[in-house]
Image 1 (spheres, rainbow, N blue to C red):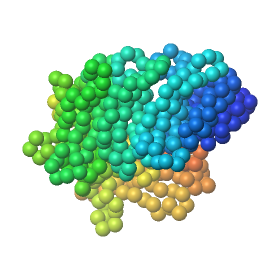
Image 2 (spheres, one colour):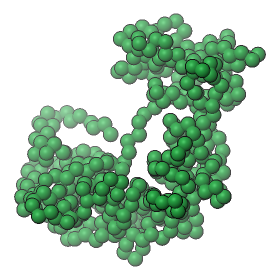
Image 3 (cartoon, rainbow, N blue to C red):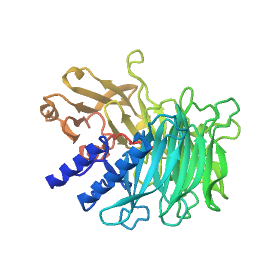
Image 4 (cartoon, rainbow, N blue to C red):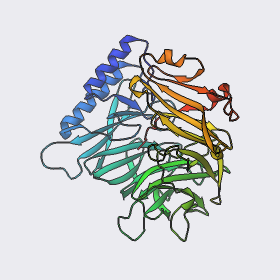
Amino acid sequence: MRKKALKLPLLGVLFCLLAATASGCGIQSVDNLYALPALVEEYAALQSNIDATMRELGAEYAVINYGSNTSTIQLLDLDGNGTQEAAAVFLRVTSAGGDEKPLRVCVFRRTGQDDYRQVYTLEGEGSSINSVAYEDLTGDGSKEMIVSWQMGAGVYTLSAYALNLIDSNELMNVAYNETYLTTDLDQDGDRELLVLQQDGSDAGNDRVEYYDFKDGAMVATSSAPLSLGMWDVKSAKASRLAGGEPGVYVTLELAEGQVTDVFVLRNGALTNLTRDTGSGVSGATYREYTEVDPADIDGDGVLEIPSPLPLAALDPESDSPQYLIRWQQFDSRGRGSVRCLTYHCTVDGWYLTLPDGWERQVTAARDDSLSSRGERAVVFYHRSGGEYQPFLTVYRLTGNNRQARANLTGRVTLASDSSTIYCASLDPSVWGGGISEADLKQRFKTITAEWSAQ
């Protein structure tokens, strides 16, 4: 997330001084707003109490490996009333003696305008803190703290804590070896936890476990199998199905490709909609071309799954394989339907949404003959009478003369930033393809990298 620059130099200096005091790690709101408290004295009092706690424990600041909450000091507005009533400080005990639980989360409560006082400490085993998140798991309107403790390479313990004014209540403590996510599959207004587990044997017991809040704890109420043959979990995303029902999309790495399993809640039980009962694999989502991930490509709030379509090669001996992507949505019965067609140029960071019918009439090839001068291109060809003729070229320009190259006759600029210009040339005399230069600008998009939250 890009942080907005402070307009008052004094506040910026004071924040930097505080960050330096905290071993280079800033104080962060759980809402990722990076908001400063109203008074600088408030920071000073909190820092003084943190320093005293660290001396008493013989501790240093702990590293948080992943996610959107990686600061070692995090200001918390757990009840959502706009006031940061607590602070969580993440520490590692380094004193001699080899503490069995060397990781600490010290929780400080705000006791006045200028002060925070430590109220309790959460203890954890492991080598580091993998991630931290805050979600309402209990439905009481207040956020719980979710901590993933890293025990070793690929081994974690997931804990969830309800935090109150005087103590904490551990809601769960579960070992896992892949990843987890929070979502509201049962649509009751609070979040559930889905924990992904790899069995590590040939028993085919790779699964997703579903944890819901019951009788004062997060309880595993059901589980559902992942596709057979998984090597790793590439991503897990909460989204919706074509009919609006909430779902979870888990993309798995297989030996020679990928599949995406789609999970929903059926009569209170987690269900893998797309997994074929015979093969044990979500065959409808299998693909060998893996450069493009599931995405809400059309912006309608439903995640689409890519279905690559290989294109004919102009020169099979020298041309790199090229693909068009059919994007499928899945409904509550696990049936897929194509929403749109794209060409993705991942190496140059762009994609183009294509009109219907192009998959039957076009192919594409790279032209990097001027790459040494900062110009790379993809050329689209139309097939007519058994021959392919070029009709559209999309350029990525990065050289010092990129503006002059973009202004060449017949080229139209599609997008630009401080270092790159994307432009195109269209020859409708060969084939219009149902698009104009204005359409190209609407259909062209740059690819932005996703920031993993865990």
